[in-house]
Image (cartoon, rainbow, N blue to C red; front, side):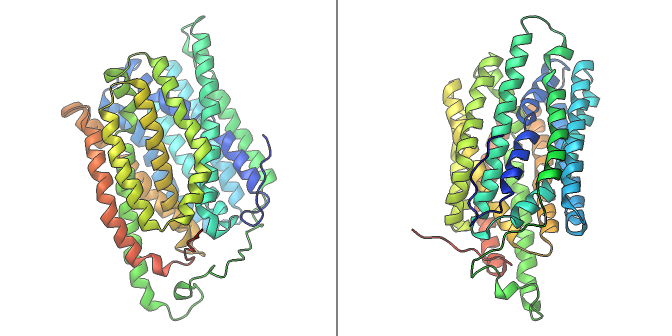
Length: 426
C-alpha cells in the first residue's frame, strides 16, 4: 500500500498503518452488500421481507458483538488481539457467504451475513477506540474521516475487481463457483490484514494531546466532586442513544432495497446500475477526510441540523428522479451527507469518557446497529404491504425528527464531556 504523510501534530506515526489495514479489510464489503439482495431476490426467489431479514441479521450481529466487545476493549490487555480475531472472523464469513451463493441456499446466506456483522463488531470497536487514542481530540472527526476514506478506497477497489471479474467470466460460464471467485479472495485479504495489523501497530503509542482543553474540569474523571454532573451526563447520553437509534433506522430503512428500486423503476440494466453506484465510492474516498476537517470546525448542533435537513431533501429527490445518472448524482450527495452526520456522532461518542471509551463506543454501536436492524425489517414490511416508495418517505420524516432530539443532547451532554470541543475559527 502507498504510504501517506501523517501530520504528527494530529496523529501518531503508526496511524498510517491503521488506514492501510482498513483498506484491506473493506475490499469485499461493497461487492457483497450490492450482490446479496439481488442474488437473494432473483436467484433464491426471496421476498422483500426475507431480504430485509438477511440484511437485519447482519446488523443484529454487529449490535450484539459491539456491546460485548465494548466491555472487552476496556478490559483486554491487548486490543490488537480483538482486531485480529475480528479480521479472521470477517474473512471466514466471506467463505460462508460464498458457499451459500454457490449452493443457492438462502438460510446459509443469512448465517453468513450474521457472522459478517458479528465479527465486524469485534473488529471495529477496539479499532475505533485506538483511533481516538492515536489522534488529537481537536482533529477527531478528521481522524474518523480518514478511516472512512480508507474504507471507501477499499470498497471501491474491491468493487471494481469483483464486478470486472464477474462481467468477464459471464462471457465464458454461468457457474457461480467461478463467477463469484473474488469473494474468497476478499476473505483471504481479511486474514492477511489482521496479522498485518497485529505486527505493525503499537497500541502502547498514544497521542500526547498538546491542547489546553484536553480535559473538561466539570467532568474530570479524577474529580471527586462530580455527583451533580452525573444526572445531565446520563440524561444527555440516553437522548444521544435515541438519536443514534433513529438515525440508523433512517439510514437503513430503504438502503437494502435501493438497488432493487432503481432496477425496477428507473433502469433495468443491472450492469449500468452497478456503474452508476461506483461514483459514490469515489466521492467518499475524496471527501471523507475533508468532511472531517469541516465537521471539526462546526458546532455539533449546527452540523446535525444541516445534515438532517439536506438528507431529507435529497431522499425526496432520489425517489422522484427518472434518470439513472440524475439518481447517481443525488446518491453522491446523499452519501456525502451520511458521512458528515456519522462523523459528528462518532466524534461525540469518543469524548464522553476517557476511562470507559470502549464501553461508550460499544454502547453507541449497539444502538446504531439496533436501528440498522429495525430499519430494513420496517422497510421490507411497508415495501411488501403498502408501496415500494414508502421506505423512502418514512426515512424523510425520521431524518427531520433527529433535529430537536439532538438539540436536547447538546443542552445536557456537551457541557459535561470529558473532552471538550475547541471550535476552530478562521
